[in-house]
Length: 175
Ligand SMILES: [Zn+2]
Image (tube, rainbow, N blue to C red; front, side):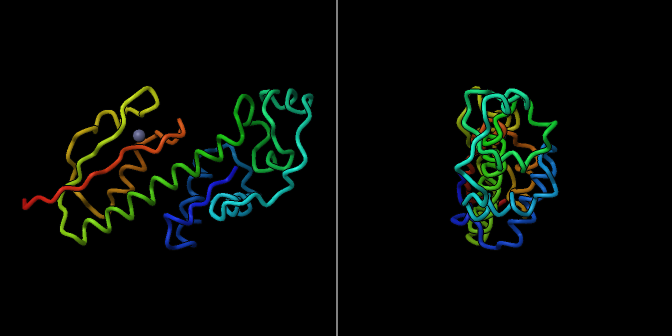
C-alpha cells in the first residue's frame, strides 16, 4: 500500500523535512507519530501490524466506510476525531503523490536549468480531477526559476484527487 519515493529523491533528510511539512499542513494526522508516518512514506514500507483490521463496529464508531479494509494500527497515524468520512489510506497516498510531484519538478528544473532552459511549458491532462491552478496554466509558458517547484507545489492541489499535477515541458528561449 505504500509507495517508495526513493526513485525521485536524492536527499533523505530534506525529503523528510518536506514530508513533515505536508503532514502538518494536512491537519488530520497524529503528530506524536509523525516520524513513523514519514518512515512509511519515504521508505515505502508499513512499520505496523498489517494483519490486524478494524471491525465493522469500530469503523462505524469512527465514522469510516465499513466496507473498507483498514488496519487497526494505521489509525494511530491519525487524529481520531478528524478521520470521519475519510479513507485513511487515501490520505496517506495524497502525501505521497504530493512528494512525488514536488521532487519530480525539482529534479527536472535542476536538469533543464543546467542545459540553459529559460522557460517551461506547463502541460497537464485536463479533466474533472485536475485542479484549477493546473487548468489555468495549461499550455502556458512560465519562467524557470529556482523556486518553480515550490511555486507549483504551493498552488497545485491535484494531489488531493490523487493525481500527479502539471507535467512540465521545458523550452529554451534566448530572452
Ligand atoms: Zn494541479
